[in-house]
Amino acid sequence: MESHIEEARSAPNPNDGLPRVLVIDDSVSVRIALERILRQRPVEVLAVSNGMDGIGAMLEHAPAAVICDYVLPDRDGLTLARFVRNHPLLRTVPFFLITGAADAALEEQARESGCTAVFHKPFTPEAVLGALDRHVGSQLGLPASAAPAPEEPASARILVIDDSMSVRVALERLLVQRGYETTAVSSSAEGLRRLDEGAFDLLISDLVMPDMDGIELVRFIRDNLALRSLPVILVSGLGDAEIEEKGRLAGVDDVVRKPFTAASLIPKVERLLARTRTASAPPSAALPSESGTEVAFKVLGQLRSVAGVEGAFLLDRKTGQVVAADGIEAPRVSEAAAHVTRLVPLLTELGAGVSRAGLRSGIFQYENGFLVLHEAGRLTILVALSDAGQLGLLNLMVQKKLPRILAGGGS
Image (cartoon, rainbow, N blue to C red):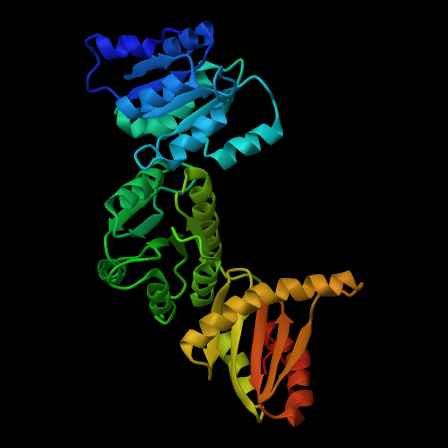
């Protein structure tokens, strides 16, 4: 079957220098319709009729975007989407799927395969050009006002640390396309220098690096009072659950596995940035009469006044951050907070499974003492206690006295 790609290979190209958009569809009428729409932008349009020619065109011409039909004569569009996301030189290229079926399951498969967006037939020029402007607008030389505003504020600043140039470029491209101000560096040392020089809203770091690996970097950040609340995404190519668990214990907020796609990365970025904005909002009614820090340390002071209390910390469940800690080493606080974050939902589900209401507190006995867990509003309080004889007093305090302090009723 003859293809337009053969013409593209043999004929002189009058559009050298323009970004290329590749259209893959076995319908002549659809290819013509898309070409007419796309020519409203400064792009060169390549059109082919099957998946094999599409792969050849992608490898030869490195398109800025691909628009592909779901149903093709030789393979489906999802197969091509996965090919793009798994290819080191193509994985960041926006891939738009065309389908005539309004099928929610197919759209979910499209997202999992790495499709940037799905167009439903009959598609409109507005839908096609809007998506193109949003994802390829910078390559088209469009002014910022010509493209839709990014979903996240352009002021969000993200630091990328990876010793691989290709990975840095891929991450930068995905983030910048969505309006994020992105700084990319090649080492942990350089990353820490940048963190020291200016504020960032999110850190994306590779796991394996020559000077300091991602887990060591996160431990350093969690031990630094000025940086410990910074959300961190770890990028891992190992697929090792044990290593990823170590990362979470060190304080990693989320993990993205290589090869990553927009679909696997961006939702996690958006979630953590949303959490950061929530955390920086005015304090909730949970701590009404004093600043959160003052209240937190008043609570810690009351807890440490009980004989046998060796240490304690307060965890804000809404933000996932430790509000205050005393008597527990910083690395252990980060590890314990990660454990508590996972444990509380499990204990809540356990109670619900036997018809019990919300979790209030729990006492866990160890060979050398006890851990006492208590829920107070949006805070989770964890206390390390060595004296069993003080359990009653401690329980009375967390059940009766601390709620009054948190409500602003004094000590």
